[in-house]
Length: 245
Length: 304
Image (cartoon, rainbow over all chains, first blue to last red; front, side, top):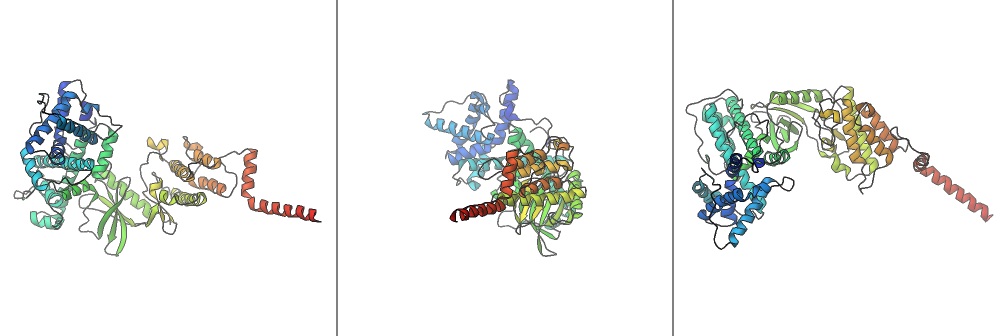
């Protein structure tokens, strides 16, 4: 995500459309962007729904994207038939079923490898938090896809907040919107003001900045991984409950 | 970078304590999904409950006014751009000036600390027009339509255009009263006049949308075609040329009332057979009585 999330891009760039690009660099960049958005739910799906070991799951996640790159799986996406995330999960199921049937796994091709993702740390989180009790694989995949999207957006928000001098905004956002679990009472703006030594109006303004920026980051990423404007709007409505502008 | 409030630096601001960059709990994911739906009303007199609708520019919540101990509807702009804030304020002022049983009264307007603007309205207890209409016979549906036109006419007479009339913006209260919501909207596909799409909306754009509502209401439940005069009324109300439509909602409603009364409608030129059929339907009771009388007279003639 090299683009600032602020103003929504006028050109409405979609990496899904770039998957079929004739330019090898554009195509590779599109796969990279998609893999970054999907590696968490794909890895979780392999680990928990297909009950593979961490090593197998990591290997299969890499291989899924490598195979998709080599054999142009994802380029066959038809927006008229399904959402892109549903298509990815369907491809993944097909890929895993074939893998299971094969007596020996084929050696991974050299076309594409996901880089700079921390499978080991993610797996440690899975061991503590993840559940696989939803009988509907589509709903489960969707949920984990959202979790991955938000996790990336939070990391981006923290970097943006630091860069823009809004580090306290990220802290407040984390305290108010991320940390409280079901049992703990949510802090109030007043309690956060006391905790941080800020005025209540500063707390509200900083929180407003963080929420707005978070939302823009999410929408920016979402737009890039949807094939059409209609799909983007439908996903945004599902995800955030309102129409993007 | 998005313009934000003046940066509030504090060297010793505490860092996030847990979950930083790590696992997001299900509860956190849920909160993040409705971030812009859950404004913080801390410090105001209102408590916010569930979201009950998404309007043209914001989200409407069920709420409670603690001061007056009553339920209310609270509309909050989706985001805090100055244009949104101005628009919601304008809408609230406009509605506050319109006192009509079909228009939801506005109690209050305010601004949240995060810059978003909210308006507080009477909480409408009822169902959407399309839900209610699905249970009603055609004459009752048309009587509801008449009341919608009456409300819109009232607003037009005071220079206010609705801009987003559609079944989702009309509620039918528990006593059958009609309430028209979400004034000042931007139009919805299927109900939006062609000129509105290019930013040239006027009162006749509302006539177009009313025609689209009538089209929905006139459609028989069995999938059959609506009566010809009703189809003509809808066509005239939804004409592409605003000048060829009914001049105002009152004129449209009057034509629908004529249909209800069995009279000829202005939008439809009927043939002789159609006229006979209509008159027969309109006067079927007296015609049946005359018929019965004549049969009796004939029978009596033969008995003698």
